[in-house]
Image 1 (cartoon, rainbow, N blue to C red):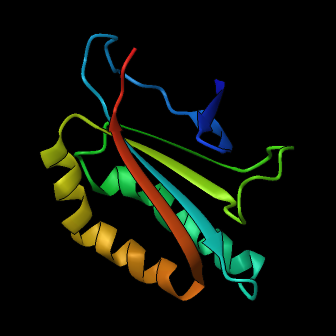
Image 2: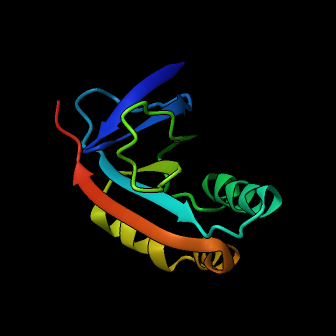
Length: 126
């Protein structure tokens, strides 16, 4: 299933994972967008993507996960190319994710190639 998710001036095409979320269940969204350094190779970027994709299998507080790359014709992404959309049931679950050893290991994979990151968390409203 594909969805267009608009994030302020940024838009990401995200491939949605199958979710067991109920429509009345509260969901905390953790949105992360990356701009890679100009000298990051395609292989470097792929290694970051692959490392991020492993996190849902390693951190059980992640309830849903999707990601994609920018394809907005508006050219307002300010160099941000990747959008990762992680869902949690609570702020505690999100906070546990942030300090989880697997997340910390992912950050170490990311650091050498990262130029800019934007993070926004919000409670989803319907």
